[in-house]
Image (tube, rainbow, N blue to C red; front, side):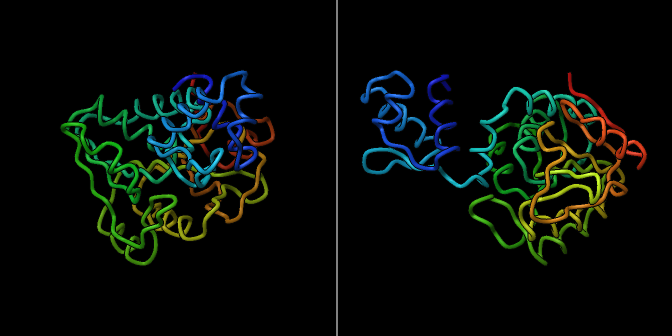
Length: 248
């Protein structure tokens, strides 16, 4: 992706809809160049073209979310991948950094099995040879491409793993980790019961930030892998026995 295309997505993330003329003026490009960029981005499912401009896809779309803070999320995923051995079975929850981790495991480890409720992850890595994917059943959320609900919970109960990698939408010292969706949060809490180690993958900007639904308290988390932690959050997490790993 070019820097200009990334800036187009940043404009859409801020304004939801933008016109070709507005983008051309803001980015210093011709209308024809912007239109070519919009076509390319639409083909990747990162926006929807409309008359005279483009519209943002849902912020819950994992492919869209992977674009932002890409390098930071990649470092976090790389550090998480070091915790997984060849031949291991792990659980991975839906989320942009989690999707990067799944891809890295598929490419760098052999004989690994990934149990996930993310239809996006299963589709994203399906063509990589040697990886085994177990996709939990459930109610399909087409925006987040994730399986949730009673059936997903029931399927999760059939497995037990050493490591479960989880995304989050926020953390506050008075409650714990948050999620934007109640169904997804409920499914994650069911999956947590089936893992010895519960590992949160998150970028630093999500600390001291609340979201809609409480995902889990600190006591249910064993490790956090991130690019940075504010002092007040570090103090609370360490007091709760949570290991903090900074991805360099």
